[in-house]
Image (tube, rainbow, N blue to C red):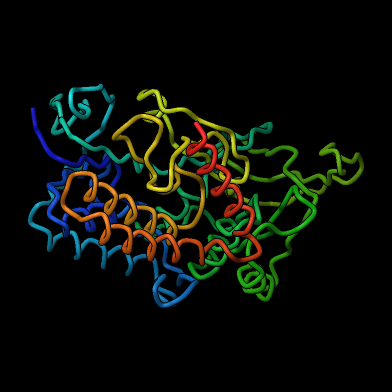
Length: 367
């Protein structure tokens, strides 16, 4: 058995940030991730971030990831366990014990405090032909193009006009692919206008109130059939059109990856603005199970910048709870972090998430 003060599941932006803040205060941290490289989605993100200087505005995601890894490496009391799958969490007295498969061995990791920063999973869209080779999620395409420098195909249909769909479309264009069209079931574009404008200026049509009816091909995608839909999401007969494509990219949103949180017995609530069922948590990101914290997309689908701030908040809260930070100092730090996070939620797309977060915390405090 391995013992530590603070165990973190997930080495993405939230997990890394929590480890940095807690370790700076003196907390002993073990950070576990199932991947062979820490950093999460940041190393797929070659675009520049928005926000203020405090939110790394103008800095590419890959560079932010590198910065976080450098900061973690400077902390001697952080141990990173890669290629490690956390398969269960069990209550101990005190704290919790995690079941971990590491180096093909089953080990137990006991910690006084635990952060679940497991991220999100991509939503899929089922239609006839969706199992053909060439139909894939936006995350898979980002991995192929931005990490491995491999084009998945030459002619791409993007499904979804949220920020992910728009950004990945532009990255595909930069990599040399042709984005034949972007289709969006809603009557308006879902992402930021600046992203939509960059794609539209290249001549890529963005077709709203439109979805994929079916995909055809012998062994792989060869063509996609689109259809317009009405306000009740029903297809309009006679509006079908065919596009010759070899890739259909699904950017249909994300859902919190919440299995471990369910296992712990955390109470959940359904918040559509945050991606569906999310763990109820307080202002310190602590769930209804004492000693279990959440941050990043597990706490509600938002941006990587928000995940960083939530991770920092948890790191400070854990350091305070373990006696490494005085209450006054911790309060000042948490207030500063919370204010930065709220700034990220002030925009036209973030306001609904801000309201959802406030309702989520109020519900936690009332129970």
